[in-house]
Length: 438
Image (cartoon, rainbow, N blue to C red; front, side, top):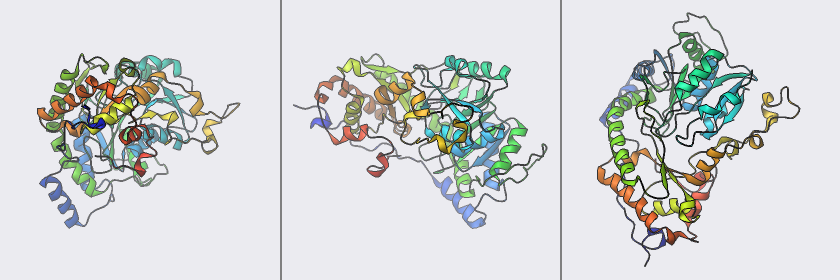
């Protein structure tokens, strides 16, 4: 008799997990206040709520200055402009990340240089950076992924004597802390996203933080259509764009920031309990927890499914079964960017890929990052953070569902099922057929 829900058994869980995003009267009152003010947009810049939120967020992360802006992808573009990126400059990026980390590099006519990730953290492998450096390297752009930080000590050791800028992609790291500094405050600039799935959200939105006034002023001008910055101490003039955030979004983010610490404690407690329940389970692996991370930003919980232990039964089958048990999950959350359908790079559109080369640089064929490819296509299992915002019973249900599948994995052998097919689809195809749960 079948035990797994995907083969006809009873699902372990039918009760919905806590909804995301979370809001309360705080957000409602803040939105009403902005509505009544009739001061809705990003101009005059920085507007009231946007200015107040950016200052509070920067302080919480340990930086002097903050700029709230349109989204996290724009935040990376703005940070690159702030450090003075030039056409043809090279930017070290991890292969395993969201395409939005890398897209701004190309759009500013610079060149991304992909480096593999550390198998113990899935973050940029700092041990591989030096062999990727050239005379054109201008930036290292580490991504703090899932619940981990890239090795900032080693990255800064490499970057500082070479006058290479460090821009931290902190889209997963709101409230996280590396040693005595918050995420984004160790490097030259830090970039955050407030897109719908993030630990804080206003639907869309982002922020750039820094303690360097020159970078801050340049970033302000770029965000605000090229206008002089508020302080204008360095009198920098450049062509800018309108990347401003609205007052509605900023007002929501002020409320979200107040709620973040309590939510972080709940997530971390439940995630730790979940991991403890599963530790030692044959065929499952867990990412390393670095002791230098003094405060975890509990975004998605990521663990490893090792198909070789399960007689080659694919991760897609495991994920399909887990979803049928009532547990939201993903595997192809990220891909190596150079292989992604969302990264269709034509060298003819990006001149820097051809400069001083016998042939244009083909990013899709040049790189083969083994750890990133294995994580993306075989082993990484991503659980959304909102399912850990409930009770210990919720965390136990997630663990019980995983254990149930591991104990009955043979039922999946040779199985064809729509849930498995969905897990094998590329992210470029998914929006046409399914709606995410966050």
